[in-house]
Length: 295
Image (tube, rainbow, N blue to C red; front, side, top):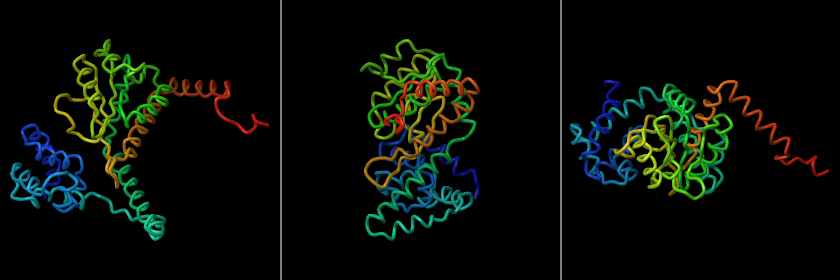
């Protein structure tokens, strides 16, 4: 089988997406975002995870010109068997699983977390990460926005990132909307937006507004086909699949941590000096608790 067929199929899915019905769009989006799982799972499991019927997956296969579902899935399965390494489950996880119902549930969560982080980091091409960091370092102002549950990720990124990147601003500020803070932004600026399914309306609108102003967009999300009405300069996709109702952020955090590390690395001596100055400032003002201070 042609080893490039999987990539070509994903490209065809992205191209066809705007003209598909809502059900077929949901199916196509799932395949694009979860190619490894699609290659492993049965049609019933894939349909359940995508939130569609098995008939929708069959219709999608036919829409793309395949003879049936198995022909559609074949390039994804072939990519797994020809390139994916087989990793054994660590012994300590098996020991955990043997400790009753809670141990089994905890082992499932642990394996999922390891898989999510691995899959998220494996998707980040070095040239894409380098492009993102160079955009950040060259920008007049770097705006950073996220809402609801994603806000905690943005807060952490800002807390650490501003030590290496003095132009970084977390928005919205002072109970404004992100659009208020982007009012004077332009082509010399960059917006980092973090949002995962279900996507925040405020964040999407901020992205649209920013690109109308010529602001460069770096999107950190869980899908390459989230919205068709704007095109980010860089999209960093992380897995959010979990064993419970809500998505996991371990994959998104691993990608953000990588971006922070590269920002410090490429920021050079200036970034290192600023980080040291912050640490000295905090020590001088007794920011950190010490047992000696209580004696």
